[in-house]
Length: 454
Image (cartoon, rainbow, N blue to C red; front, side, top):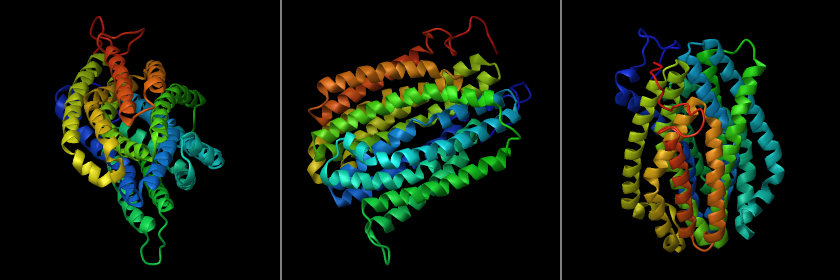
């Protein structure tokens, strides 16, 4: 579903104003499917590589954690672009939309090349810092080095998806994500275990399959957004500076988020191979559910940005209430599904030697889902208002507290690692909600106005 690039008026009122639940679900459903498809790459790799044993699966966990941690730091290319595009269409400024898209894609390509150049020589050190040793270290280095070549493709796709979702076109990212994962599954089967003249490449095959599929997605996404909007006639340095300022806040925020996840993964890896393998399985599924929950957050971001750009804060607050209600409901459903589906996950993703440490940590992760849903929902809402600095400060506080507690109490068992992670989630969700209701802090964008602004 897409909407015209016009300011909000009676003649062009957004469907959310008269059918909020239907509009939210209609927009969120393709986002939901695309976000499920995106981390499916990691789940498919985990399922295939788990057949190679705990050491290979632990190496995959180290590799994916390093790569996702580094690349997530640059997610401002998607988040900032989505907000800027959403606000520009709310105000009816198509030229600005075109310029923002061009800037985002240009920056994404440059940052991706930088990651490739800097990352390759640092790979061995990164694997060591994650606690990998011996055969696990060797496999992790091989996997990471190959995956660096997909970094530009990943960032280009992230930026293009930001533009499309800012335009409230949620379907094209879905089809691209599905295509990428279908390609990855087919390539995994051939490259990891070999088929015909293709030799079995093991962990290296999983990395190569991912890189090829990522570049296919980037070419499609980049081409489609330029076909939709056209190329910008010129760039404005002020707009580039704004996107980079947004990037600086999101860079710190995402860096702190990924730092905590890295510390949790490192703690699990240092406990032993079984703990590392179990943590990899839980982490991959947690990322899967987190992005599943983020469907409403991303949709809320686009809607809030649109209404804030159109000067309708009351409608943006209405979006916040609807998004949070749906998110918590889905979080409860996911918690129940994880509890009931534990045995299936063990059979698919967990080596037999790691089952005992897996079960209690898995149950804690399941219990966190409703609160996790609320944290992702409020993140998306605040992204839509451009309240990036507040989110940065909340993440600094949450990660500082979480890292300290993890250092003191989270180094003995995998269960302790996930208890600390649950506390980290609670802190983020609490501040996210309080920023809206009642609207804590100075200049809270979604605080109820003294009189109607719509």
